[in-house]
Length: 357
Image (tube, rainbow, N blue to C red; front, side, top):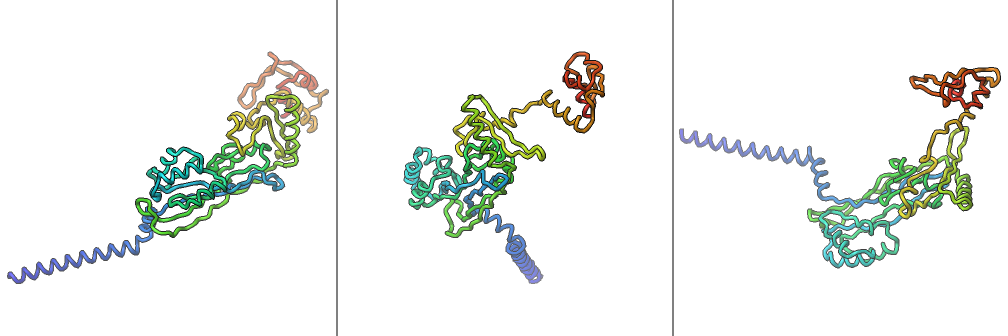
């Protein structure tokens, strides 16, 4: 009996060991085959670091394809703090080249981040400064391509086009309204590092940025140049606080030219006040035309033979209900019986409303 119990225990232990090995093998199979892609992506996310490369914004052109808003290529400075060994020396060199404060630069290099963008002094650097930084050949110091908006006609059409911020985001005008389409998609340089930020190997991958969509305006640059010249002449002669011109195609409503004064250079928008750069006067200073538009209504009514100025008559009671709203004549009690010529003479609101019907 003792021998049987002993053999039974051995069998139980053997089966448990076999079961454990089977579970381990099943788990390994699950990790290596079934769940491999998910776990591999998670591991890559932990190891990978992305250095962003900004995309070019889409161009803005006039109706004939003349470029009104373009891009120029600059470089920006980013650092990986954990890859920099002698932070004091690197901070001193970068501060000297960028003409910035040493203590501020050292704070950038000591930050507990995987990637630190040197902002704003390290943004949109000239080629000369970029070459000087690149010649230092410091580990953890990177120069990345960055796109900068450029307006070749400077002040021309400035309020219509608008401007973009340092991060290439549209802040006003066409640049802001269509920012979603103009922005494009940023690219990146991906490399791998350990938990302390030390680069694991020299391999890296490059994803190219995708340029934004271009926008073709109804503006005609030739008409716009005339508008700008005449506004400049008017300002020089009369010195008004504000001035504006809009040219439109009366058949289609297309805007062929639009400008106002004061205007600004969107390449250097920070030099101007918020009131100047954010107020496109033809749109900002809107108001109801009121009685000045009655001549349009009258002309249309005569053209369409809706009324005869001498033979047709209208009785002005002083008010009328239109779609639940009470419209009153400017004269209390109204004008009474009128010919339509009298309606015109008296600028009778109710009579003009009747012309439209």
